[in-house]
Length: 363
Image (cartoon, rainbow, N blue to C red; front, side, top):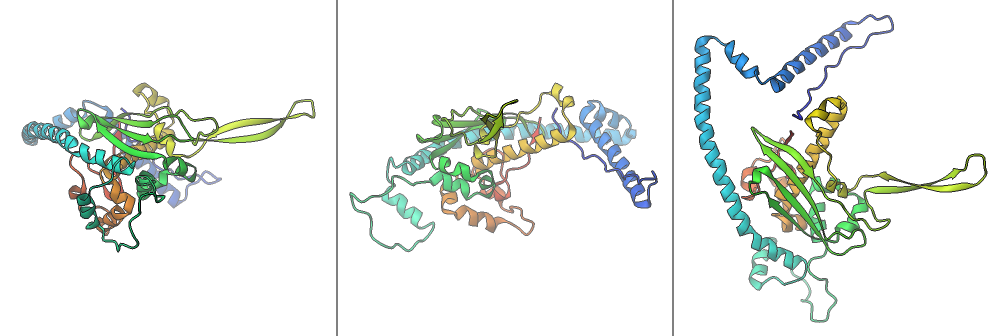
């Protein structure tokens, strides 16, 4: 099990004479307490007999009441399983109902069709804009579809914007659609597909990211799968190329050595961090595991934001309307008060404030 590590207690440091002052002694005691507390929490996670042993130590009357609560919880879970089953059926049904809207949106963005007069009339009532100038005439130089639609939508979401670097921007302007597909059981995972026009960066027409999930008391990540990007020569945005002169040993001649180094890029999203196997867990450094866990959680949050926030309401993110809506929903603590009403049916786990989904643990 890949579990959340408990923070290590901070011990006080000895001075040069190996004597603790009062403050250092207090830090040492606090550190010991934190270590003991972390050990107890670790035992709860790893000892399968912990619950049975805990109940065994309870007074007989209290133990019977606990058994009663467990019986009630068992009945609750039977009803809850029916709820989850109906939710899965509802999810599937609404995915089919959403599909025609997403297809029409794609066609308009890509310039395959024009919106109907009725659709234009409905949309003009959403954001009132004073119309100026005249409609374009046949033969005028007008853009096809809606240029930079998905690039702009992504940039207007704060979380996604933080993952996009200047080197990525031109490439992302070739993005013509983003789609998401749930597994048959939507709590088991989903795939996000980025669709690209022909571009000078890579030969792929689609890039995919798949999340495999497990549902227990909370959503657990089993693994993430990206895809290989077939970069054109010299166009890999995930690396930087450094050249330096190197002198031959024993001579005056020099040569130029080229070295590639990984760099920050949105396209690292398609090369996700690997979740270690159970057997590998003990071989990893504690700090390295915590850093890896944070990377995996951030990666998952980014994926859910794209799936649950941006794809369903892409036009609102493109115009910036979604930014204003999110700000309006924030309460004084920076949390989304009306999150349940804002989520689209059929999007699986509900997202949180600022387009950030709920925390997900790693398995």
